[in-house]
Image (tube, rainbow, N blue to C red):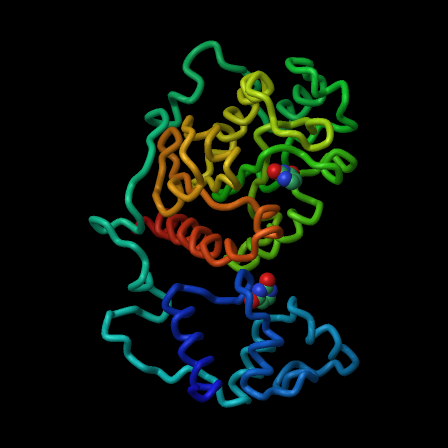
Length: 311
Ligand code: URA
Ligand code: URA
């Protein structure tokens, strides 16, 4: 068995090649990583010193620089070894699937350009606020009668990055806000890992009212509700859409293909690149999906970075 430090160094190098900046989605916790390299579980060295906060630094949510400093102090800083595959420190990692200069192969194309989203006869609601008001008084399907609150979605109206979930759960129904329960907390960690605060992005669901007991959305509910989603996408005009879970993916891409088949491709939704990944609630049940999810959100982030930089 090789030296654990060497193992960890190799592991970190691999992760860096994948473009990762922070462990959020792996099964190795920061504490475990630190234990492997023999770091003390106390507050890591070289952190800004307001003493008494050491407990906080032991949490997984400790600032990335803290545990990086600890890893360095423990002698685990990755050696500057060339992989020979030309991965630049901050560039597109060599392990990213590249097809014809693209980050990932093209997938399903729904619609052509965003101008076609509505055509004529679509809802004429021209702001997200008006849309939220329309959702709040919507009776197009029966879910409004059992839900406590509408959950129209929220975030930065100018967001480049938009995430689409399935439907509100109990906590969302109570609060009127999307992804605020357990799955929402994981989603926030995922966002932080790709350098987003929750307020940077826009988060919505396919359904705006909670299905009773979290049962699956019904087709007639989806068709009743989807004009709102479509209008949200048109008003926000994101540069990247991430479909969270089977339901959002299959709805937006008008397909019955499984997540396993839909991941790893750059689909187009009326011209907007759309990436499919696992639903955070599914990750809570099946941690083995964290790694692929990590790759998916990194891909989405790189697509956005390229779009923004005009590359
Ligand atoms: N949080 C996680 O979920 N995974 C890690 O590897 C580290 C922090
Ligand atoms: N799951 C979803 O799909 N959406 C939410 O808002 C919360 C949980």
